[in-house]
Length: 264
Image 1 (spheres, rainbow, N blue to C red):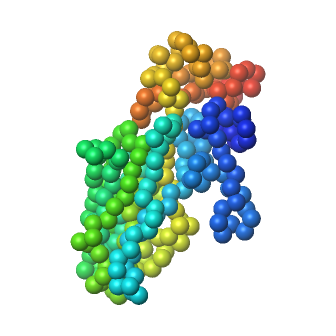
Image 2: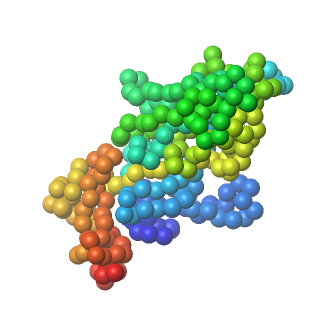
Image 3: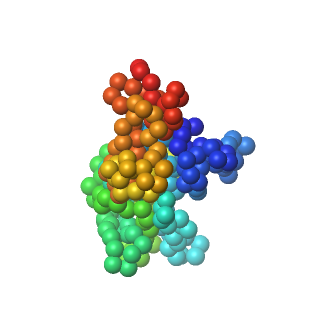
């Protein structure tokens, strides 16, 4: 595990960077790393990002009750954490043949957006195409740390479930990892492909100060770039900074020398 992240007591820079090894449901005793409630896929010190596995909210027609049912998953809450939703790497992605889904933040007058995905029949669809026929995507703004997913009840599969499947899906996910398949419409292939979740990218930074200029003053004694061969990088998603090794060096800029950045 790469510092400032760590596993165990006092092994990370602060509790927000704690990684917990958890025996996940249905994992046959295999322990996996988690950041909070989300499975950690990887960490990039260089880019100040992590990739996590985000559950996919669903809106499905129940043939027994003849009602539409939402999954309990609503989204992500990064309030008072170092994490922001990457507007560069993620897109709000909606799959379905009669679906209007929304993404919004936690403010009453804050951000809200969405997209509509429709089709007359699953046979009209094309693999790889995500432009409103069976699939749509939309970007998010910079600086988001919270989102919820909602489905518009006026768009549902109650009348079309036999030909276009029972379920619609909507989640914020890493755009480059998504390639629309027509099989997502009338099967569980979307959920199966991503093991019930989808990869999402979070930008992280040290957010106790506004920028590198403030951090380098080191007025609080908490400047994190400890290696002599490190540089400070301003966060591009909200206030704060992270550290890189200087050009020509590699290693961990958050550690003091000789364990920090060293020549390649």
